[in-house]
Image (cartoon, rainbow, N blue to C red):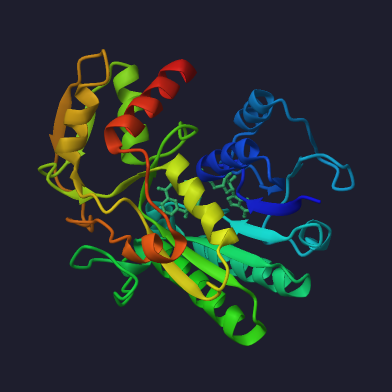
Length: 322
Ligand SMILES: NC(=O)c1ccc[n+]([C@@H]2O[C@H](COP(=O)([O-])OP(=O)(O)OC[C@H]3O[C@@H](n4cnc5c(N)ncnc54)[C@H](O)[C@@H]3O)[C@@H](O)[C@H]2O)c1
């Protein structure tokens, strides 16, 4: 019998990519729990159609995919968690700016929501709980980022993700729940139309014929990981034995400046690109890329889609969706 993976936030960008990947893999059943605050049900349905899979909103139906419109803070998640073998916890308040505007809401979703799920996971003997963290808990660091750096968050979002990491470790220590923390670098790819991240923002504007904005001199760097590669890493984090309580940085290990990114995009798009340089944004990290040595060694993770190829795949999708 197939085991079941619960994806919280499964109607969002990373979740839809993971769903797509899992349906291709055809090894697991999937339950999606999402309150649709930013998730997209029509993309979800599109992915199911692509794979010829039907879904139900009724947990007792014997289908490969179940969708539950619920909130991770709900106190009635027993029915969902008891049907699940693994939890991939992606649902979150994901923005730095909203976290500064309303740190309490950020903490409510990211800290209390995570704690709620961890609690249910202990109650129903979840075999592995994978938590999506980010580089934000680390704050400004001398790159490359790695698992040894001492966290020093700059935003409430970074602090709430760090709290989530702490609770994961604590639930492993106190209850033996097999938690694994994955710190994603900048994720880009298909199904990201709603995202405010740089690649999605650039493509939306370029396709509309609008100028793109670069804040500062454009020499700030990031580590861009394609969402399909990230999905492979998440599945490895579910399947690899004896990694309970561990943290993994996930990225590509490649440092790319925003100017370089625009150069790659110029080679892909038909439209002319107008770049407007704006004053540097306060608090923006200058250099940021990730060592993935630990993920390579222990998870056997190697990114397969390089930035040029990933940008091409993403652009084709954006154009089609436009
Ligand atoms: N995209 C990135 O570059 C990136 C980088 C680092 C970390 N992450 C983390 O990865 C995870 C997924 O991010 P994403 O880019 O897919 O974001 P997203 O906003 O596209 O997806 C988040 C999903 O969670 C759902 N959600 C939000 N609050 C909820 C709640 N209280 N209950 C139930 N569902 C809720 C939303 O409706 C949405 O479908 C997040 O935890 C994010 O912090 C993302």
